[in-house]
Length: 355
Length: 241
Ligand SMILES: Nc1ncnc2c1ncn2[C@@H]1O[C@H](COP(=O)(O)OP(=O)(O)OP(=O)(O)O)[C@@H](O)[C@H]1O
Ligand SMILES: [Mg+2]
Image 1 (cartoon, each protein chain N blue to C red):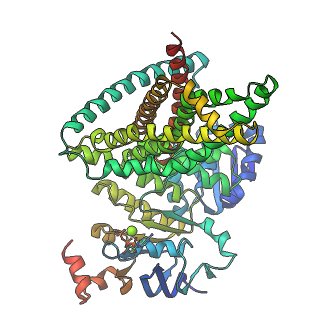
Image 2 (cartoon, rainbow over the protein chains, first blue to last red):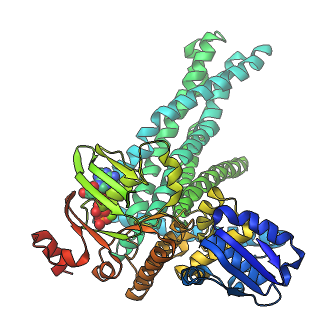
C-alpha cells in the first residue's frame, strides 16, 4: 500500500488475510483524510473484507475518492459488497439504574396480576372438569400422578428420613444434657408434621415437577403447539394444566404423609439406639403430644404449596419468549420463584397460626 | 488438476437399520451450481450433512478439496465451507448481527470496524438491513432463512451448501436470492450445492442437476437433459410442478 499525491495505490490481494495489516497502516497515516483516488490497477482479488476496507478509505477521506484502473469483475464484486456509510447504525444507549429499577418493579406487579388471572382460570376449568368428564383426556390425571407422585417417592422418602436423623441427632445432644430424653418424640413429631414434612416435600416437588411444568408448556408454546390447540378450539389450560392441577392436589398430601412418617421413624431409631428410650414410650409420647389440628395444618399447608407450585410453573411456561434459550430461562426462573414462594407462604402460615 | 471440488464414491448412510443413502457416486464441479432434486424424505438433507461430517458414513468415501473428509487435515478446510440448514439453525440466544459475527470473529483477526461493515454488507445482500439487532425468535420464517444465508456467506466460503434456501420465500424474494447466488458464483467463484423444490429456481441457477429417489441417484446432468429424461419418477416430478 502506498499513498502519494492524494492517490492510494493498492496491490495483490485485498482479502481477509491481508486487510488487517493494510487497515492498521492506513489508520496510522495522517494524510488518509486527503485521498481523492483509489488505484486498483495491481489488485488481483478482492473479497468482502477488502470491499469493507475500500469503504473505510472512502468514508475517512474528506473528498469523495473514486476508483481508478479497476477491471470490470473487480468493480462488480465491489458493487455487490459495498455499503453506504449512512446505513451503519449507531450504538444504542443503555438504560440507567432507575430506569431498570422502575422497569423491574412494573414487571413484577404485572406478573403478579397476570398470575392471579391464571389462577382464576385454572380453578374455573378444574371445577367445570370435575362435573363433566367429556373433555377429560383419558388417563391424563393418572399419568400426571405417576410423574408427580409415584416417581418422587424414592427421593422424598430418602431425604426426609435423613432430615429426621439430622434433627434427632442435633436435638438429642441438647436434650441429654438436661435429662429430657423423652421430649425427642415431641420435637421430631411437631417439626416433621407441621414444618419439615410439608416444606421439604414442596421444595423437592418444585424442583422436580414445577420445572417440568414450565419447560413442557414453554416448549409447546415456542413450537406453536399451543396455537395449534387453540385453533382446534381446545383450551390449553383445560387440556394441559387441569390434569396437572388435580394430580398434584392429590399427590402432595400423600407425599407429605410419607415424608412425615419416615422422618418420625428416623427419630424413633435415634431415640431407641442413641437415647436408650423404648419404642413404645417414644410412640406414646408422640401420640399424647400431637393433636389432629397439627396434622390438619400440615396437610392443608401442603395443598397450598402444591397449588403455588403448579401456578408458578405454568405461569412461567406460558410467559416464555424467544426460542429454546427462552425455555431454559423460564424453567430456571420458575424453580427459583416457586421455592421462594413456598418459603414465604410457610412463614405467613406460621404467623397465621400464632394468632 | 482435478476440476471437481467434491468426489463421492460408493457412499451409503444408515439411520439405525434403515439405509437412507445407497451407493452414491457424485462429482461436483468447481465454480458451478449443482442442484439436488428429489421428493420429500429421499435423503437430500442427509447427503448434505454427510458431506459436512455431521453424519457417520456406513460405506464409501467423500473427498472435498481433494482431502478425505475423515482425515484430520480436513477440519481446517471446514472454514472454507458455508452451510444453510433447512431450519436456519441460527443461535437463538444472540441477535442476527452476532450470529453473523461469530465466524468472522473466530476465524479472522480483522478489526471490529471491518467486521461491522462486512456484517452490514451481508445483511444488505439478503435484504435484512434493518433486522441486525433482532433476535432470531423475532424474525419471520423467511427472514430466518435469509439470515442463515447471510451467516453462511459471512466468510465468503469457497463452497456453499444450502438446504432449501428459498422454501417459505415469496417469488420475488426467492428470485433475488437466486440472483445473489449467481453473483457469488460469478464474482467470487463460489461452488454451490443447493437443495430446492422450486423448479423456477432450478431453471435460473442450476448448472448441474442431481436427482435422488429413495436414497439412490436416478440422474445427473444439465437442466435440458433432465427434461428429456424418460425415467418415470423424474417425469412425474417435473409434470406435477
Ligand atoms: N435423525 C434421524 N433418525 C432417523 N431417521 C432419519 C433421521 N433423519 C432423517 N431420517 C430419515 O431419513 C430419510 C431421509 O431424510 P432427509 O432429511 O435426508 O430427507 P430430505 O430429502 O431432506 O427430505 P425433505 O425434502 O422433506 O427435507 C427419511 O426417510 C427420514 O425418515
Ligand atoms: Mg431435508
